[in-house]
Image (tube, rainbow, N blue to C red; front, top):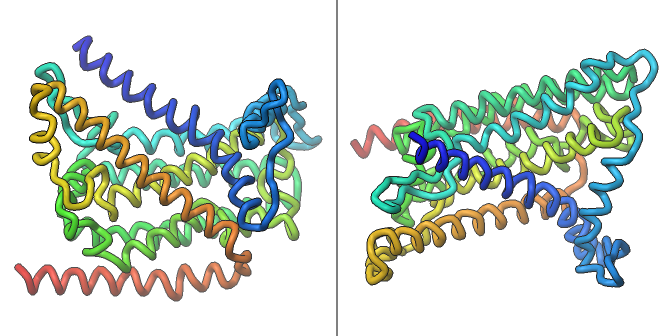
Length: 358
């Protein structure tokens, strides 16, 4: 019992360290530096420690210090309780989704089977969508409670956009569920050990629709109408400052990691290396014994998984700095008139193919 609790706590600490401690702050630097490279600029390079700038990485520390000491401003007429709760409601679901996302397989360590997922739910994928959708309330409450017309308009756009794309997002992964016959993310990941069984090859249209709908759900360019600066100042978080402002940004960056992780699990072989099976890797390190070989295998799989996650984070950042913002009517048209019919057609075609091959 104590050992199981210790293992669970270790996995929770690891996920928090990776998402909150590493990805969230580093992505604020990547956001600036990658855009600077793409636009032939230098980018963040002013913050330094004893003359060393570390390619601008010290801006992460400077930003954190600034947000920590900045005034927590609440406008007159705002609902103080809801104004304070809104960023928490937006951030917590982004963190909770990682409870069911596996970052490795199952390993025999010291005579005990260790599964690299905090909670291996049978309905793991359903849990991700159910929890992630709760973040919508945070954005809507933020806009309404700020007593600001621009914030309210931004929250209304957020609600309509996220609800619209949640429908398509859910339908895009139905094909994956039909192919693998499970909603358990660990089983879906394990089923992709064979390179040609990766979800991308079995559901290529599903992958592109899922990526599009996911970016729209995260309100990133070209789907950033809820925060359109040229129209709504900053949208739903116009009246936020300090740590509350930082929580909204942290939620957005953590959702980028969540999207990359889900795409990796569903479509790109999870923690598996192309054309290299788990048995092959274990045989290579067999001289280390059962625990030793499994330990090496675990580090390799975790490294492979997060390498794939980094690739999809890079792709999302590239899209963000490559495309212009869509008009609001274009976003709604894409969701309801293009992606939704395609998602339904993909389900029908997948069912026909499965029936024909059975």
